Image (cartoon, rainbow over all chains, first blue to last red; front, side):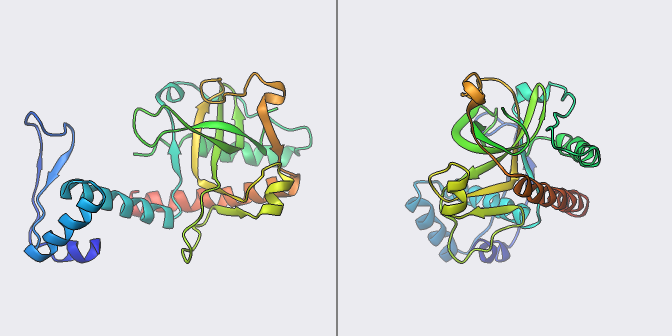
Length: 118
Length: 133
């Protein structure tokens, strides 16, 4: 349904929101819908106790997350207190071969370099 | 002890920022690099029927879960990882005997998960480059 609504969007415009009362750091997007589609959107949003704006935002975020998951993207969660810590030497189990440990160390270097998901 | 292949309880970081300790989940340890540990998320929540599993998500049926000392079937999300400090704030059983490790994956399973992680990372890096995700 989201794609349908978005496909029917006639015109969008962007502007940075800097005025008080708006979400700072977010970009506003004007969405134009047919009245019938908007009524449906209102009903869907009301059913989830959301505003139409919040419903659209949530739907877009869900769609992005689904695409990222389908594309095989790793979502990395890094709290602030971990972001400032430097990872030490990789711990090794007794039964791990030298070759596997070397490969795993290289893999972990790349994984530990993935930044926190947006 | 917490090491590669260990399943243990983690207060997995919240989706919202700033990330704070969230709900308790049994997580799979991918690597320990003190003072940090890299874990992958698991959940017992049902997967929507008819929805294909994304690459990097592995189901553990009830019998397989039981062999890992877990009462219910669960799924492991290698595509959802957290890099957290090795502290009780994130790992509540850290001071408990055995650091609260519930089970240790056998070598064969560890290797399977490792190989999946290698492929997942390859796809991740490709997607980042191609799609800018």
